[in-house]
Length: 225
Image 1 (cartoon, helix red, strand yellow):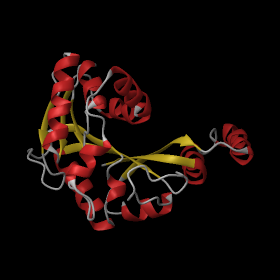
Image 2 (image 1 turned 60 degrees about the horizontal axis):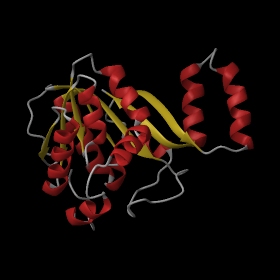
Image 3 (image 1 turned 180 degrees about the vertical axis):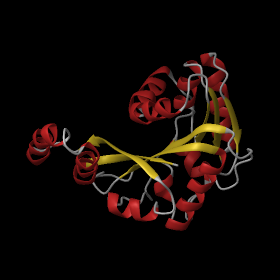
């Protein structure tokens, strides 16, 4: 992935563990389960999938083990080396390579789905649009997961914690087909909304779910065409 202004690829290398241990692997897969579920919704069995900003590669390795043809890219050669070694140790055929998310070295329409989590919030509006446009150039569907203003911490330090309205404004050039909230901030108000939503979803599920995500979700997944 392209390194945002003010950071370096070395800082990202230091952010990740030195090796993808079993505990890191299962923890990462569990954390990414909602993103992976959306990838599986839009990629056919055995389909072509691209992770843009793969880090140590746990989600890509998990998808490869499920039978998908998976490629993972990251700007850092060191992280690609770690992901490649992890894939070899786990015995899967995921392919990892160093690459800039703004200049993906794949033909148009190569993939069924291109996805990422924890990537786009590190860029400005123009970069976000350019990165997603590049993902949609090489894939039929883009699945992008980002933290929202309800997320209480900046794990790397430069995350833009924006409201869902701000994200949707940035994503206006694209067709947003799904908005999926997850990692909800539970409270008395949230529990009351969930009770209301159980009824409201029968009448207007999409609007109900979007308001649920807008008001309470710490993380939001956008499915884009």
